[in-house]
Amino acid sequence: KSVARTAAARRSAGGMLRSVSSARARGVSASVGAKEETRGAKTADAVQARKRMFNEKQTLVTDAIEGVLRSAGSGKLARLEYKNSIKVVLRNDSERPSVTGNVAILCGGGSGHEPSHAGWVGKGMLTAAVCGDVFASPSTEAVLAGIKASSGPTGCLVIVMNYTGDRLNFGIAVEKAKKAGIPCRMLMVKDDVAIENAPQPRGIAGTVLVNKIAGAAADRGYSLDKVYEIASCAAENVYSVGMSMTVCAIPGSAPGDRLDGDLVEYGLGIHGEPGVERTPLASARDTCKRLVEYLSGATKGKKDHPYSVLINNLGSLPPLEMSIVVGECCKALDDAGFSSIESVSVNTAMTSLDMAGFSLTLLDLSAHSELSSLLSDATDVVGWQPPTPYSPSVEVLPCPTAEDDAARFTAPDEVSATGAKLRDVIKAAAQAIVDKEPELTAADLIVGDGDCGLTLKQGAERILADLDSYPINSGADTLVALGTSVAQSMGGTSGVLYSLGFNAAAAALNERASGDASTEDWLAALKAGGDAISYYGGAKTGMRTMLDALLPAAETSSAKEAAEAAVKGAEATARMGKAGAGRSSYIKGEEMEGTADPGATAVGVWLSAIAELV
Image (cartoon, rainbow, N blue to C red; front, side):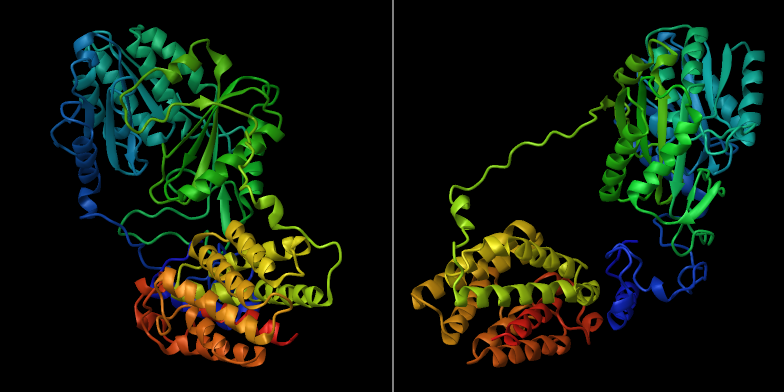
């Protein structure tokens, strides 16, 4: 979904520029160039393994364990020696169960779900984690070694996600541990509710909450039976469902193609297993509603129970999109009638390698009187995000207003003929930018970061919204109002530069014209605005910026000549090579060859719209 600054992305964006009229689907978040692809078709790039950061495939897990241990803090964690594929991370602090006599808590399974499970080893959570190869259960020998190394006289609770290999290997190890005299019990987590009435529901993100509750109960000094009782209440009353926009891929291997194009999947497993529902990508709002529908079906008659919510990143959903998901999940739960949500936690807790998706988990806190407090008990595990009290509403505070804001937009009681003409000109210029946004965005995907068109459109739409309140009979005051509109609506540097230009132009026009301004006065104001942008912004003509259109336009003697000069100057930027300022300055010149600077193009657009009316 996201548009990177790679050469491939720029070539795709170039295709969008050439066919921009058909390239608007869901803003810049739509896959650039995907409009020309047949859904499900494999491109040359797609069949290759994704770029990943690792050494050798054979050492993926042991290298990752090394990172966990080195970042945990001196003396807190250790590992067992690597022997016969045994990969176990365990507590090494002075308060570990083998020293204090508390119950040990062990969990594990295939790797690829980090931070699960090694990332949860620490005081108040797991005593040990047994790591298999990627998506492969650890051996019975490895699990038994973990139990023996971590357990004290009070025994060990082994928590397992409900997969056949894990059930068998962990189960055999538990029986062998019992035979060796170690008190042991095994608890299976089956929180996946995607498949209704599944005979063996899978264990997914809810396992992390069960780990935390079990670890906290053991830390309180409870017996093995009591820890098992409490953890079982959690395991039997936790419900999860996930969705993804991509299929995960083991580093060094090519991903599957079942989610090519705009397809997404609901209810898929954390090892990349196919889900129960495959549909075209919808909005975050509708996606979250669909997940809540699954959870509603699994919690019939219990929507008024107190719940703790875990919203889990499955691997590579960007933080910005994750925040959107959190808000929409909370709204969807509220709308669905979950009336007693007690707490919310947002975390990357149970992943599926690089899967771009998320899961939603509900833990029914009414299942046991201690669940809520156990979730909040302290732990020194760095990655744990304690649940925070849930608020069904967002508090909004009044925004401070500058003292002169009230006088800023004072429309005249009667609009003069000159004022009416000025209003028409501004309206035409702003509308031209709105209409040109797709092309400006497409160009910026090649020479910038893809936001130029949308940013300018936001400013233009704000101008259109504010226009009737402008002091339109005064050219200088209207320029100040324009500067305020764009400053409040355009993010990044563009809004600041345009606001600076409008205010400098206002000062020049105010000095030159006491009454109706002439064409010469307006061009002088245009030059003052451009000079201010150059002085404060640090750019000059020839640097591949908006000034390559703006400053030549200001040296003309009519609106028509100004528009022509601006368009000519913008077109020239396509041949300038490397930029000397702005976001384009970070991009190689050859990658921008043939694409005009969108900021300069925009100047030609609004000046051309003005020239048609004056």
